[in-house]
Amino acid sequence: MSLGRYFSGIFAVVGMELRQRLRSRGWYIMLGIWFALIWLVTALTWTSWKAQSGYNFDHGFGRGGPGSLIFEIVLAFVLLFGLLVAPAFSANAISGDRSAGTLAIMQVTLLRPGQLLWGKFLASWVAALAFLVVSVPFLIFGIAQGGLSVGYIVVALLMLAIELGVVCALGVGISALANRPLFSIVVTYLVVAVLAFGTLIAFGLGISLSNGTVLANQAFYKDTSYQFPAGAAGESGATEGYPAPPRPADITDENTEYACYGPLTQYPTMRTDRVAWMLSMNPFVVVADAIPYPAPPQQNQGYSNRGLIESISQGARFAQAGPDGTYPCANGKVTASYISPQTPLWPLGLGLQLLVAAGLLALAWRALRTPAGKLPQGTRVA
Image (cartoon, rainbow, N blue to C red; front, top):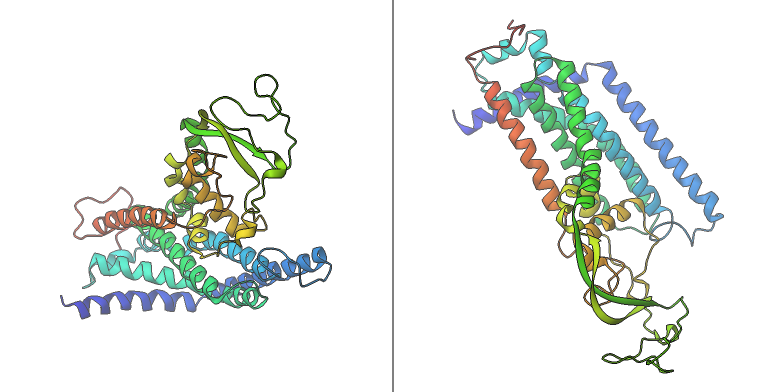
């Protein structure tokens, strides 16, 4: 079969699936409800910002004005509910046809298992992307309020679309392997729950078992009073082998809140860097870590006025850096309170997600091959 005929078969399946959805009145009702929910979230976010900022548009949340607040809340809302909506379009794509007796009719045509599988996947992905398109005006509204660049929404929409595609691929793969629509839907939602919440639980359990040590010395902070040690140190505070510790007033570097002093010692800590790969598979981490947030100014490295999505990204990077990059005075150096994306974590997480989805689709292709050697008991053929 030529490549052109192969793709024409895929597009035939996509067209058939989309025409069935467009004929359904429930499809438009769901889009209307989705639009109303996002509008309500945007309006409540805007009202909340105005109430807490005292109608002062020069001081707001995030990186300037209400733009980042609206953008990040709407983005998190779209991703959360997208993960809930996408399985509804894909989890019964094949098991539903098998239950209705129409799958066998399609299998006896010239369509190959790969064409049927890709067509079902692309149709469910396009259906899920329609909900993402509806949310674009609200994300653009957040961008228009200031504090963000166009690159934010481009990267965010691209990563949201990819994550919806991953969920649809998982749903179609499970749908081909399951015999009943209800079973495939439940299993798909369980897999999505494992990615969204199970990864957090696994990461938490993993760091509790990943005990280790870090080589560090003592940290002396600006906002704490210091008393010179008594005895041999004398009034200067110097001890044999190393100089006197700094006074809080002597820490003049505006970029740091403390100075490091004393001999390097092994301290017990949790090695989050060993299990950060578990956290990387979380869809929220993948989307948040991919957005190119600029680093705060040098004079404000302790920048804490971050939004929800940026905080998720920073949390993932802190876990990836481990105690060597986050523990105070690790290796005798002042650690940064804001980690720039030197080695992004999202490519690893997205790669693992795609690997799982590809494995399920490969098993689904095998299950759709005809003639079938053995059918499960109770399977409806036609």
